[in-house]
Image (cartoon, rainbow, N blue to C red; front, side, top):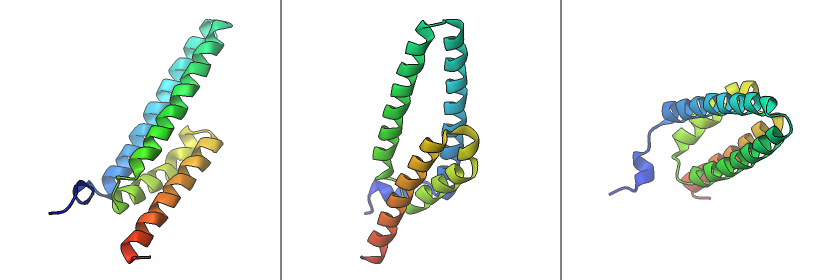
Length: 114
């Protein structure tokens, strides 16, 4: 019997997850920035805390990638590649694409037995 990673949804689900994550993050960021502008100086703390949580969330996402199937990873990569520049800072986009690329390369090498 195959492990759970073999039963994982394919590329279309990875693509959909990337788009949903991008849009959700963008909306949340816009809401936090709007609230922080209304709070004057204390708003800076809210933005700093939000950014910290965003970085933690990104690291947690990277940890989960190890369990994604190759096709799901490819779908996620395509989604981030196509729409990431609309919703992400350039450093976030670069980091995501680098990490996903490394995971995809590892998965391919593992599949071909290298």
